[in-house]
Image (cartoon, rainbow, N blue to C red):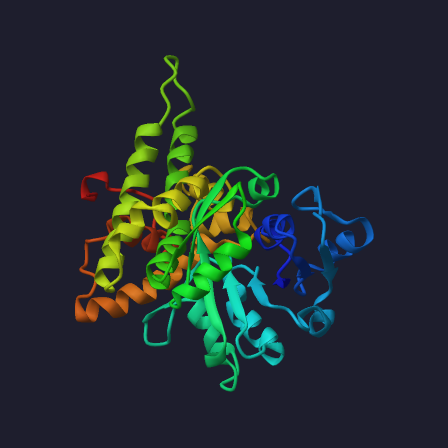
Length: 348
């Protein structure tokens, strides 16, 4: 089959490996932010961020070549980050055909103007023209999958979700390899909320590392702060399950691949963890933001969106005040400038 990936970042490109190994023809389209990546891919067949040569059957395209790249493809992959959901919907809409499928690697949430919780596939859908939006099928990927490991053909387990289970099954078959294991699901809402919220809680897990550094590091007997990190991790899963319950979704997703699995791998490092460490070491959010200037902080975006969602939802008691204390404190730190002071006794 012919597949277009729009977004040449880490995961957008990483997903090309199982597609290539299944003998699909892949057209990798960079966004306006990926020009240097596509230039390297065109000239050297090398992805500078993944630090790997592209697999077979991948052809890179600049965003200005998107019409050519999307011509005749069987399905599309949205490889942009959470801040690009509106952009990609508008960008691909003119070129979509009746019956095409779109699967997103994007993870995130957004608050509507009324404070309602929106998942990113629905945002993408809303940006498609009315003449095509109900003629295509949308799906999303959730679970613990680091792009570099997927490109290295390391064992990875994920869920493909779509409100149309046949779409999820079709796409799972197209991607599945002996190292990329996929479970189809029809519960798109539970998957997207789980993988979206986990970015904020990964930041919180990073706070344990920052607290250790602030305390002077490992003590003379070798004591670390894994206990604290584990408690924060568990609270994150608990709060994801409570939000899922409150919105009528499946709380068990919080403890499966899209929730606990994705949170575990995200807590291993990256921008969200770095931000959490800075906050725990005593930096205000404003100071941490300056230190990480130029970085896309998806954890912050999630906290900001949750602040709006929680404020609106509490008016009809969908999420009771105090039921997600860790998220509420993250909101105070990020949106109100308060100092970090996690109250562990409010957990569980």
